[in-house]
Length: 345
DNA sequence: AAAACGGGGAT
DNA sequence: ATCCCAGTTTT
Image 1 (cartoon, rainbow, N blue to C red):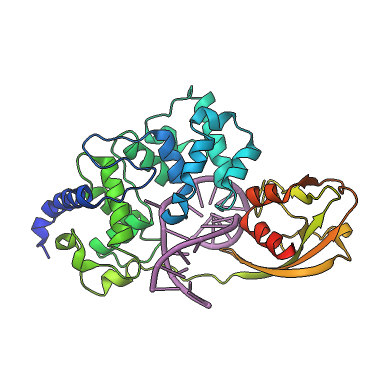
Image 2: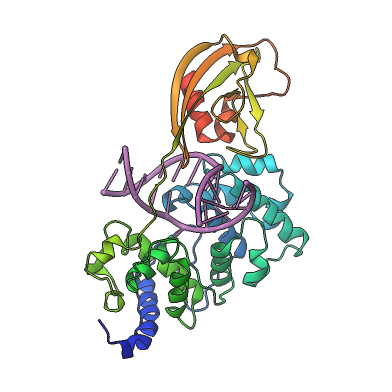
């Protein structure tokens, strides 16, 4: 460990060393430009990937990014798409507000900014769905400008490197300040992505690999128990258990009955199956008396859903609902409904 | 400041 | 089972 008088020097060497490691071992990812001086990525691609990656693993996004970009190749294409199409392309990814914000963001870029992404953090931050993290990511990765990118990887790395023992979320301000001190003087985009790779492959949440860590000489927790336990996180809340009913109801055409969900709440704006009880809405009376066909358990961050799946036939479409093919439902409904569909057919 | 908001992969 | 994830918005 360096003496206090040498910390300033360590701060410079940290970023330099991490960038050097990144040049050798950057992961290749579909949305990423390989490391190099002055490299930039298309801001539209950064927006899509960063939005998809919010609270979502790289493994999941890997399988969805390409198809989305193919469907909506440019910010103009996304802006001119119908919301229904955007939501369908997002089905299964979760946190569906992201898709609606993304669509609103594309419209704003197209209409307010003439189809050109604003190149400064402050303007980006004003766009729908772009918070502090995403604004900093676009600023650095797409525009090569200085921005302090702080996500959970960075929080973890900085808390360990600086041995910050104050629990989250109170430690956030301190962590952001320390993160800024550790920054390099150029290659801001590569540096942001180097931190991500380091957090994902070396400075992992549970089993950090300090023996392989390139910045071990600059880390106050390296090889100690602190490297495993920091940052200190707040205790988890227990999930509320809720029960409900969902119907897989067939029409004479072979299609099934579906609904457009309300604009707020769970799965807002998405295509869903008729039912209720689990989302604060009544089970529609026309579903009564249908045959029980299965059960689905679905766990969300703040709810645990226990759904009874019923099946039946109706001769015509009930008012307020719409007919969709089973294939269409599978492709555009959130996972919960697709699971119910599988259990009810 | 706390709650709402999905889903899947790793352990 | 539990933890965690390239967070943002609303309450």
